[in-house]
Image (cartoon, rainbow, N blue to C red; front, side, top):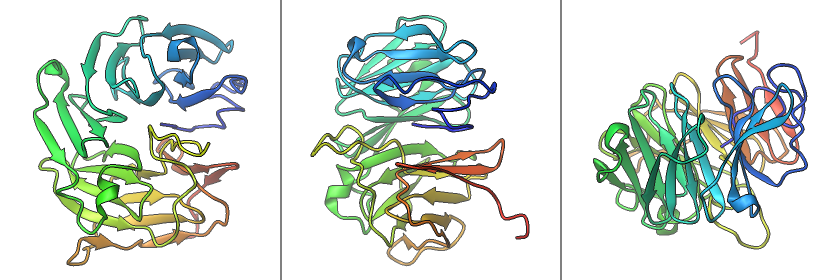
Length: 299
């Protein structure tokens, strides 16, 4: 997951440069008080997660324990806790104040995670089982209180998209929807209460070169999230081989649940990572180039 306020290899939120290019980082996310906050590093230091302070570009803490590549980091929306997922088939819960994990779940391919807006529920996506598991944060040691079968809810998507190529998991800010990103022909917009398919967000063009999270084939990088919700929860933005696609979730999909893009933001460069900054009302997209998108003041 990447959440950008400034170029993460350039200016940090306090105006100083964050020198993190020399590390083989695979995940980066912003904490509530510092940028960039927790970040994961591949294949070294026991696949450690590091907590970076930007005032002096030093690592405050190492969070060690994972025995495989970290595939996802998800920060709690209101507390100093975060979730990490890994190819070692564990999900770990951490507190930024201590280097030892505070909770651990053993799951099959738990490659993506997300918090609901209240912070009381978190979801874990398992492409290997084709399911999304919902946990009560106060009782996560118990079984998930709900399991959504993506294969059952896939709609017009092919069967392979139900088990492979997942790129993003996110709750909408109103808590009503879950976005499951896919490098296939579209993304899944699910009802967050019963897991039913609300719409299949069809991508008219080709996907990016990046693989699904947890997949390693042909030397291509895995995805860091090519789609996201807008802050109002109404719109979904996605990248691709070219252009940014925007879907209006209030529009009625067809009888087959397919929803076509409502808008296309033209750009010929590939956008393999997309994030929305609610503070500045701007979109960031990136692959080999980093682009910032601002609202049209005349619209």
